Image 1 (cartoon, each protein chain N blue to C red):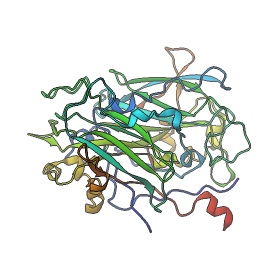
Image 2: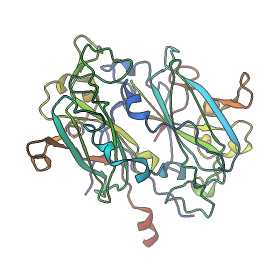
Image 3: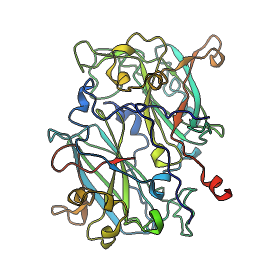
Amino acid sequence: MSEIISYRRPYFNTQPDYLYRGYRSTVKRAPTKPLVFLPHTLSEVTGPVFGYDDVRPTDSDLTRQHGGEPIGERIVVSGRLLDENSRPVPHALIELWQANAAGRYRHAVDDHDAPLDPNFAGYGRVLTDAEGRYRFVTIKPGAYPWRNHYNAWRPAHLHFSLFGLGLVQRLVTQMYFPGDPLLRYDPMYNSIADDKSRERLISTFDWETTIPDIALAFRFDVVLRGRDATPMDSTRS
Amino acid sequence: MSLLTTSSQTVGPYVKIGFTSLAVDHLAPDGVTGERVTIRGVVVDGDGKPVNDGVAETWQANAHGKYPHPEDAQDKPVERDFRGFGRILTDDKGGFRFTTIKPGRVPGPGGTLQAPHLVVTVFMRGLLKHLITRLYFPDEPANADDPVLKLVPAERRSTLIAKRSSTDKGSLEWNVILQGQEETVFFDY
C-alpha cells in the first residue's frame, strides 16, 4: 500500500476563523476548545464520487425549471474548477442555491417582505467537464436585509457547494458581483482577513460568455486544495 | 504555478434549499453487505439550543474496509450499491437520524489499521467554514489502537464514540455539541 499524500494546509489568513464577532451567529457556534490536528489518511483523501446519473442537463438552467420565466435579469455564470496546482478538477459536483431577483429565498424561515417567484426555486447543480469547466444559467439575485445588526444587508450572492476528489477538498463558498457597494459593509465577506482572497470571491463580468440579446455573463473560477504530488507522480519518482 | 484555495463562506440559514435534493439518510440499500446500524442524535449550540438548520455529511468505507474511490488501491471488493456518502439535515428540534452499515477497518498512517469510523462534515449558519469530526463505534476493541483517536486528549475521546441508546434499543446515539464542557472534538483538517 503506497503512502498517502496529504493535501496542503491553507495559507495564513486565506480562510476565515470560526469565531468572527461581526457575524453574530458565530459566537455560539464556533468551537471553543482547541482543534485536533488531523493527519490525512485514506479516509480524508478519498471522498464521494458523483457522476452523470446525479445530474440532468436541465439542472444547470435555473430559468427553465418551471412553467414560465422567472422575473429578473438573466445571467450566465461559468468558470473552471481547479486545484492549487492549476490542474482542472473534472467530473466534480457543483451545487448552487440563491435568492430570487427580489432578494427572497423559497424557504420557510425567510420572512423578508419581498415577493416569491412561482417560476424560481433557486437551486441547481452541474458536473464539471473533463477540463473542470462548468456553466449555469440563472437570474441575478437581489440583496436582502438579514438583521445581523441594524440595517444589515447581504450583498447579492450565489451559494456554491463543491466536491473535489478528496474529502478535505470539500468547499462551500459564496460568489459575489463586481462593483457591489454592499460588500464593504458585509461581515461574511469581511471575515476573510487576506485582501486578495476576499476579492477572489467577486466574479468578473465576462463579455465573451454573454448570450447576445439574451443574457449577461459572469465568470467565477474556484480553486480547491492541492497537494505536492499526485499519487500517480509518486509511483514514478 | 500555485493558486490559492478559494475562501470558505457559510452555508447560511437557507442551506436546505441547496442540500435537500441530494440528501441521503438511508445509506445502504438491501443487498449491501454489513451490520445495519441506526445512528441518531442532536446538534446543539453554546446555549444548549438545538441547531435546526444544520447538515451533516458522512463518509465511510464499506463493510470490507474499502472506499469506492480511485485512490483506494486495496484488493478488497467494492459494493456497487454503496456510495459511502450520507447527507442528513437536522429537524426542528436539532435532531438527525440515519441508517447505514458499520464500516470495516481501513489503513492508517505507518502501516497501522484504523478502527471502524465515519468522517462527519458539519455545515450550518454561523460556521464560516465547515467542521470535521469522526464517529466511532461502542464496544469496539480496535478503538484502543486507533491512530487518530490516539491524537485526541484522553478525556475528550468519548465525544467521538457513539453510545448504545437506552431508549431506542438497537440504535446508536451520537451528538454534536458545538461548545462547552462536553464539546465534541473537531479536527484541524
